[in-house]
Image 1 (tube, helix red, strand yellow):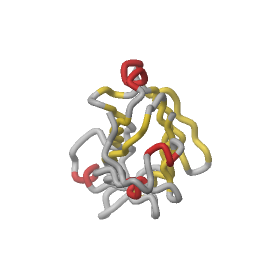
Image 2 (tube, helix red, strand yellow; image 1 turned 90 degrees about the vertical axis):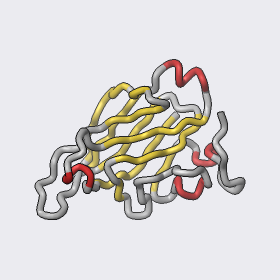
Image 3 (cartoon, rainbow, N blue to C red; image 1 turned 45 degrees about the horizontal axis):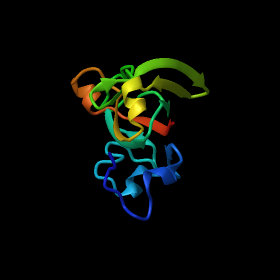
Length: 142
């Protein structure tokens, strides 16, 4: 499957990385980058991203910030493609960032197609989860 794209910047042009300097909103793919402002890094509790031929997904994220006087609850990290959860592989702390690695299911890897990746940072619909933000520094895939 190929997602409709802006002819100036194709998914392949991102070389498997979204970041402040490689903004998914510039792809022209509808909903690509929804929930994330790469310029500031702020990410909502759910982010959608278009990826091409993913084999793994790596996130670099800072932990949740507190808002509205609520204590900051811990984020939970989930990634889904085509309704299939990606398996969590590893987490590594690097200063104030977490590097999180997910593997893509074999059936999805075999398709070698453009896919929509959904990231979720909350496991409930509580007010403090719905209004939570964290800094998503980058998303890398291959």
